[in-house]
Length: 285
Picture 1 (cartoon, one colour):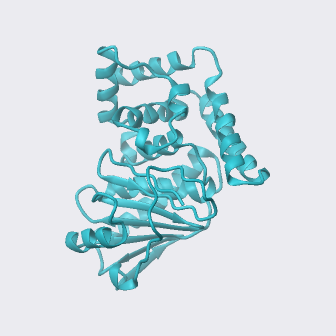
Picture 2 (cartoon, one colour):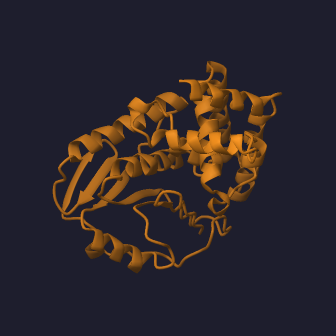
């Protein structure tokens, strides 16, 4: 079992894999014992593979469902893959006190967070508190859920990079202004330069600070939006990951070969400088 935490903006990403005894996350926890009484299950609605549970109809429920379904279709188109038909269960807490009690009862070792993504075997679950940031939170966690339904061992940097990219409303085109400002400041201070090889060595979310999230977003934006060739390179890396995962005898072996495969992205000459030029391009827009 392993647990990974995302702490940058109050969102926590948990990935519980019971088929492996290798601990890859920050710390381990006992098996979660949920009861139906602790979850909002009085009201349910669904759209495609997405199932919403809550204690009653939500004011913007239809719009949220449509937006998350559209996000899955966007991911499918952008990354050139066929999304899994596995259902994604979303529990929406309308009462903050009840949500905090749920966290305390079932995740006592973790700090309070606005949303969680949990994968147990093939079950994909999102727990979220309804509030002003629910839209960003749900888009972020839905990206994780959609990716992990197909690629359970997707490298951390691209997993978080894609989630940071697609958590934004579609009209922003994946341009994360907060990340852009942070990277620009660090660049001007002389404390940071793009380095994909370095970022690829960070395999635990405990190693990810604000700067790592921002750089992961930059690399994702560069691969998806700079040239058709770079987008195709990203898509090809995902195809290789699917093939590797199916061909290896163990999760440990697959994880190792996946990392080696993704390292091909950084082999081209001046790759880091190209990402830096992409950053300057975004600043001019």
